[in-house]
Amino acid sequence: MTTWRPRLAEGTAPVLVVLVVLLVGLAITGPAFSEPAGYLALLKRAAPLMILAVGQFFVIVSGGFDLSVGALVTAGVVIAARVIDGQESATAWVILLILGFGLLVGLVNGLITTKLLVPSFIVTLGMLLVLDGAVWLWTDGAPRGALSAEFRMFGRGELDVPLLGEIPWSVLILLMIVVAAALFMRGGTGRALVAAGDNENAVRLSGGRVDRLRLLAFVLSGLLAAVAAILLGGFAGVSAQVGSGLEFRAITAVVLGGVLLGGGRGSVVAAAAGALSLEALFTLLNLLGVAGALESAVQGVIIIAAVAYASLGAGLRHRLRPRATSASSP
Image 1: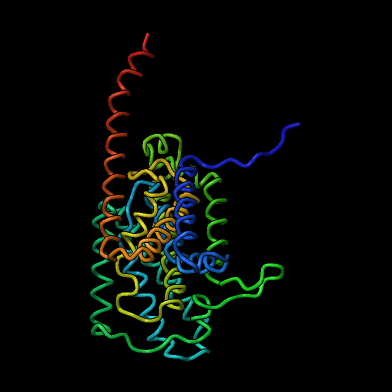
Image 2: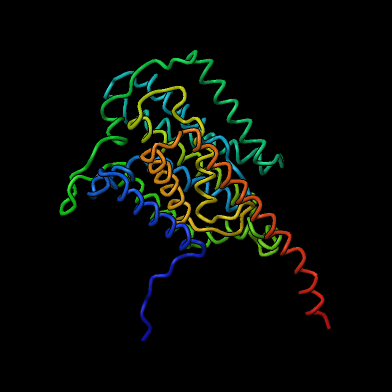
């Protein structure tokens, strides 16, 4: 009789070690982290970025990039505030509108990338500029309207859970998304998504539809960016800069979680843990009185290191491939 044992996905352990070290550092440095409430507040603050990282994971592991998610978050918050304008009765259908808008943006990104064969970096950079320009044109830099209390509940409210006490809605939504994403990646479509990033020709030869897989990745990324917009709007309020820079934070979080740039390897749990580690790192730096400008430098170092690692790995695989071929020939 065999017994089931939990097993960490490849690349998850290192980021979990980093996360534990950072959490210990917070416990030593910040008095607020002497109790569980401090860590719960950290998780609540990190939830939107963690959700964005999960969406970015789908795109990166399949071999692409999505630079539009930050601008999509801003557009979602601004649209919601303008349309709701404080009316509680409009909350439900506006939430559906924002989710639909995220799906539409992801669909456009995916179709242009897969059907017109434009690199995803260029497509999503263009979408970022389109959304940013549209928001500024519509608001003149000063968003109007107000979010309703029901809308803001998801970002700042709490739910009384038996035995656990009050748990933030954002944390519950985050847990549901991470669990659903992890189960999805264990299925056939999830494994095919990773395979498309590793060797798309092999996927095509085995009957897989690489275009559909990558289109799905962009749609999921857009949808999760819309969810992050709902949570961030409730937590941080309405601003024309609410999503500024989040696309680079999400990419940094994903590569910090060990996901290979260029696709083909990674864990969705590690990507989420990378986002939490990044938020914990910035919180620790803030407690230590380190200048906020260092955040951008840290993100830049992580991304450059990840690109260098991916390039070295690709070069090593290229050098080894001819040897393997010659060794297997008669």
